[in-house]
Length: 295
Image (tube, rainbow, N blue to C red):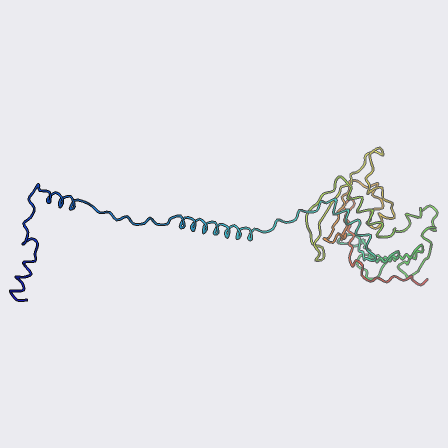
């Protein structure tokens, strides 16, 4: 840029062309007021409501997820245990549906001079074989088919007689031989179910089967005037299945019952001052063949 151009540019400068306003003049006051005025630009307020609702909605959703997670992780409450009396009554009914069964009875751990018996039941047919300690062949056998009884001694001799007319006139027919198993078991379990001393002792496995253990106590009666428990009133022909023929004259005795989840009686135990015995039941409704022995 040359000197002429600079001179022309300088003449465009307002400060050089016009003198500044005199202090106190109208122009001076207008310029002063404009210089002291602050222009404030208001920005639009943020839309906070949508943010608040978004946060709230997210919080509710998160709470629902947590709640759902907690509910899913809480295990279901176990079903209440069936009352002892109910289980025993169901077991009494259940045994009437059994058509065949095998039974082992006697002292849990036999010693010399003691014995145990193994029985099979199919309908009205019964076969029992009793073994002395240390023997593999039965010392005696008993077979009943209908009203006929066969007894076999240790030498193989067979005696046949009628169950309703025993050879010994002093014996009552109902006490001569065991009653039908299902009848005896049904009456025994039902009587125990109604006993006021019935209590449960917990779970116990028997031969791989989970069972519930129940117990009643038959108190010794000090006089004939005292009430007779229902179990004691059962006929001897039914008590024979559980080694309890003389229960009425026993001192205080406890009877134990083991019932599986399908309400089948698996064991009956007797604890008395003279000793202990157990009767185990197994092979329910399995095929059982019982034939009359040859005489």
